[in-house]
Image (cartoon, rainbow, N blue to C red; front, top):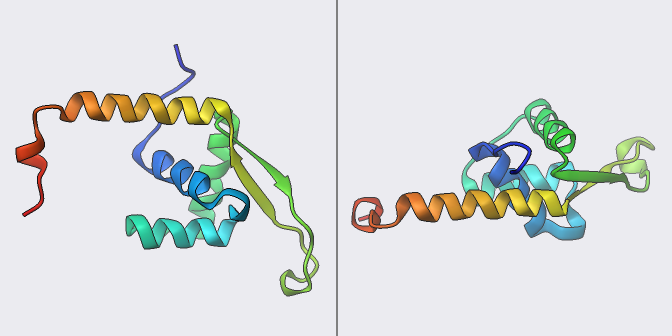
Length: 109
């Protein structure tokens, strides 16, 4: 049994990190969420969600190089863990099972 389920925002957040690969820093993640999912997110909400996912064991981060643009502050690069990929796979399978047979209802017109 998996540790805990993923909420919808947690799912799209992990998917954004997977999509960004080595560019998965805070600002690009927020931009990916807005551009692909239409979800504008505040910096505080983003980082509290990232911290929650780290506590669940679904992502990890490493410190990137400090830059003068950031006032010498380093930035964190995020990466989805194997447990995070597994949780996404379970969520995807559940979505497919629940939507099976509802294609006509869910189709956009």
